Image 1 (tube, rainbow, N blue to C red):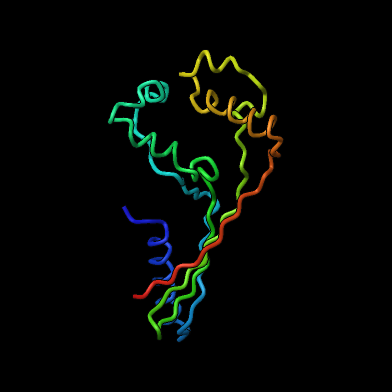
Image 2 (cartoon, one colour):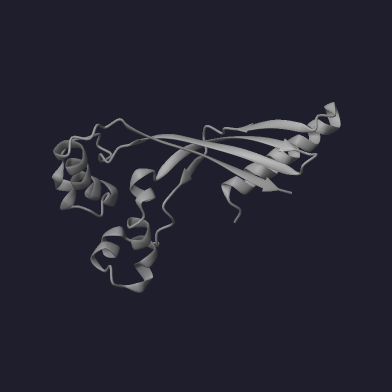
Length: 161
């Protein structure tokens, strides 16, 4: 499977070649901002019931889930929309891609902040809510972190082709 950055660079290069044929441009800007594309950070968890994985953490078949749980990106930025702009330089054979993410850090359960601790007794119904009803209460209510804490990330990659 190719990475998001690789797919973006392929699209940018194809676009630059097309623009070069039509206009003769040698430096071509490209913007990739699919509003429906969300990237998952923190890794891929193991398949199966989340409660079983939580209560059998020593089982090797659940290592991937525990790696995801231990990765700070999982909690800071699990799913986020990513935008990128690239400039393809056909003379120097480079693609410079700038990435931008803007998201909210919200550890509230799906029920939008209600403190329904009953989900702890029925965790199979929604394991995410069973975890975030506790984490969200600590993070937002006890530690007083706002629900709209913004997370931003910007970085640049240069690729030679």
